[in-house]
Image (cartoon, rainbow, N blue to C red; front, top):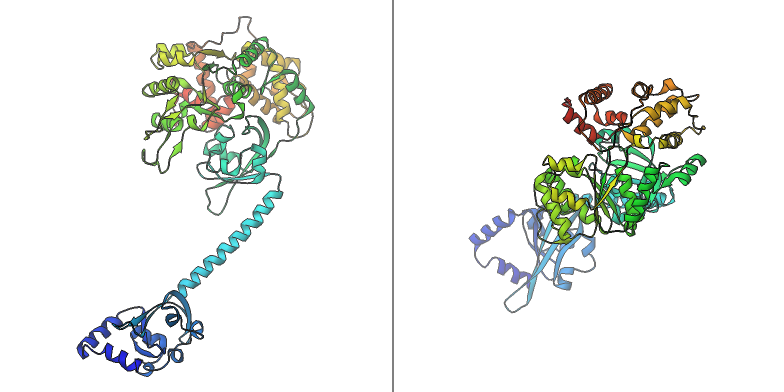
Length: 579
């Protein structure tokens, strides 16, 4: 009875309408089947015939289970059990095993009597296979990750991964122990800035690959931590960089003795002028007044800034250093103030600036005179109001960090030349701190040289003795690169001298300038216009270093005892083509 009623319903519009709807149904990619309440097939489209593997005439009136092998429907039909089926995956053998997504609804007459049901089937065999393969791979990756995480927990070395922008992508538990920063705090942060290290360029990073070096990182608490750092470039086309970090080897007794007798907040000296400086740093560390650190390149301006930070109550908060000479105007604003998403081309996400990241810590603005004039007014306003906005933003953010400025030239001269606003200079120069150059504290040359020789000694042998003639030559040399240059010379001597340091082992430019010390007093630290002869000599030294290293500025700067920014600035002043 139900079968006849349903047939009559389908054909009630006449043969023409029936052919029309048959054509419509046959264009469907889904298989469509109409069944009676007792689960007999009464209608099907062309796609259904392929599933049934028999003609529709043969299937008509037969139970659906005789035409389709469907294990899920063998016990009870979910369509007539629950009134409908939504996205049910069923297995049909047609004749090979295929997986279909089944949807079905009941057909009822005007009185609500169930006449049958309409079922559609979509072949999802390949889709299911792909999904199962993805799930299998995800499970394998999850298992491998759990295994690697378990291994990393047992490894004392810190392991980290950096993306091409040198931001932290991955971070092992040992890194938390070594640095104090949790994986959540470290992930996404610039690795070198987070740990208070100078950021290398790409060529320097490549030069460090597969080679260990001892560095001092700044822990989250602000305390320095000596570690051994090693970079391992990842293979298989990845642009990421993997790194290893471990605690530095125990220091030699001589190093500990020098630090104990002459050390102060990461610096080393026995010169009276430096002892006066140390006392000044202790007295101003906990003030809120702005500090301006002035000193020649290589004297340790960042070390002094870190000492002020560490001695103050801000020492447990972050320390950041920004070299203003390495950023163009717009990039410097983003570096200091941060930016909102969409503020400029390439601003794909909101980024906090160093003023915000420093929180209640310290921000060092190095080479402050290199800030473009049009942006100096913005910095002045921030220092006066103690508030700022991100680039492209409207929210006023309070400034909690202490701002310390540094320069390697006479800033009064920069004011007179119109390169630095006088109001900004006086705002920064509340407490002036002058670092004497190495030539003004010759008594430090011997202890610094011994210290650097011991630090550079990686072969486990006693450090080489220093003959008086060598000390005389080193003391007579004016050290234009200051402590940084002396450190480079110590590393050079440590690796070329096998049986002791001899006078002839010193670099040629030191022998030429230091062999016959002048009786004239040493020049003062206050920067002044160099004489033509001095400029020619400096130009010759820079050109020689550039030629030796095939104009690779990073290596040339190391040889000259200065950083890349200082070298670039001197090249520009002296008219040296960088090729």
